View 1 (cartoon, rainbow, N blue to C red):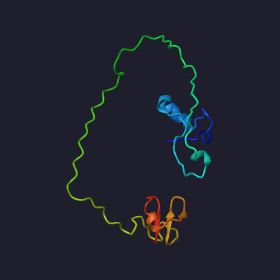
View 2 (view 1 turned 90 degrees about the horizontal axis):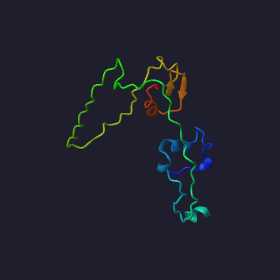
View 3 (view 1 turned 180 degrees about the horizontal axis):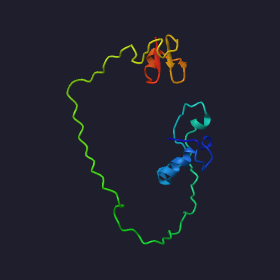
View 4 (view 1 turned 45 degrees about the horizontal axis):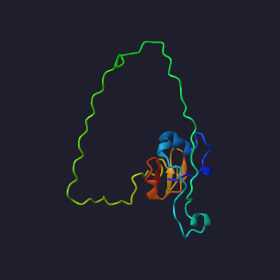
Length: 155
C-alpha cells in the first residue's frame, strides 16, 4: 500500500496515518522507496517516465535511551496475585467436514421481514422506509429498508 506524504496529517500528529503505521509496525517493516509502478501509456509525463532509479538515503537519528527504573520495594516473587484463581483451559472442537452435496442458497423472498401496520409505528406514512427512533422517512426501497433492523417498511 502506498501513501502520499503530502496528503497525510503533520508528521508526529496522532491523526497521521503514516505515523500510526510507523509506530505500530516499526521502521523495519515499512518500505521507504519511491513508487516503482510502470504505466507507459499514462497521460502524465512523470508517471510515463517510470520509477526514479536513485533513492536518497534515509538517515536515522540516534537511538533514544532511558535510565533503568529505580525501585525501593523488595521484588515480588509470587507467580499469581493473591485472591485469583487460574483460568480453566480453553478447549475447541474441530469443525465438521462439509457434506458431499452442492451448496445452494435459500431463495430470496421479496417481502421484507420488517413491516409494521400503518397505524402502528408509521405515524401515517405510507409506502416509505421509516425510522421510528428519529421519526424520519428514509429514501430506501423496500428491499433496502429490510436490511436495517431499526427501520420499518410502512406499506
